Image (cartoon, one colour):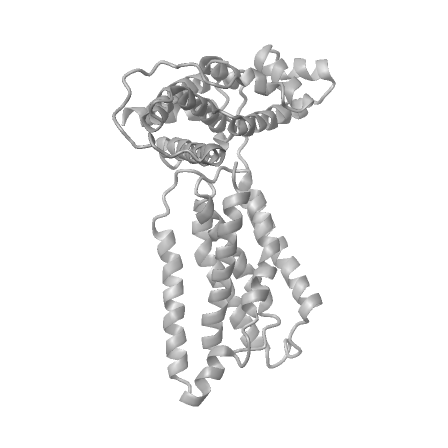
Length: 180
Length: 212
């Protein structure tokens, strides 16, 4: 499959520290994930987009769990499937709704991103202060880790760890967020 | 935040990912778990009085049996740590081990005189290993579950069961230092059931604890 070799090359470059390749990987993964979730959550493209975002954060924060000896798409869809099951389980807890609309169907011809229901920016505000500051400085205000370190007085490795932990926390918050 | 913005945010300032040295951490966790289990046996149950004498050989055989059980389960447990890797023959290895134990039990019991069979099978009392081995497995299981949370397991029940069963093998190794029953049929039945008990507990606990 063309997707497989191409995506695999991108994530491997990303793992080696190539920012543009990592970005390209996430962008292409987002397209595939959107198709995947929309097929399974028909009639609620916002939920699907929430899951796309959640899975992207999962792919990013857990990218060291990708074993290059195995197909990348298997890894990616295993995570997507896991997020979907988790989503359904949470939805069931909340509303006891039936699981209609979860059946697999044809591809949705429209793959544009619709708006997600929840806003990640709001969720970022809920992170512990250290994690929030580290993410804001490096990920949103485009400062380097070193600049962030001298601005906050934290060590560089502390900044990196805070970002990583913060993104993991973010993914958990995304899961807990009420989407009904 | 739109998905494109989220991608920008995630990709910004990406650095080379560190290769986690998980094999070393896993080995360390297992060794610590085994040592704690051995201490629990030494303090809580007391080792067999004949450990250095007549009991040395049977204790060694039982410990090796438990180690073999753990070794047959390990490939499956490792596989389940990361997403999207097929299990393949690794389930077969576990089934093979259980099958061999079943055959060994029957062969061993056939070798006994009919009136001795019950004694050889049950060990002359309640098989306490079914209760105690899971307790001895707990330190290893706790360490491995904690370790696995750092990865991204996607089949939680199965992953929990594999960790539980593996830890059960480690716990049974420690239990062998105390276990007073040396009959083959007893070990191939009740040790295996004790490990299966650990797998069941692991499945239930793993499905909750491993969520991420």
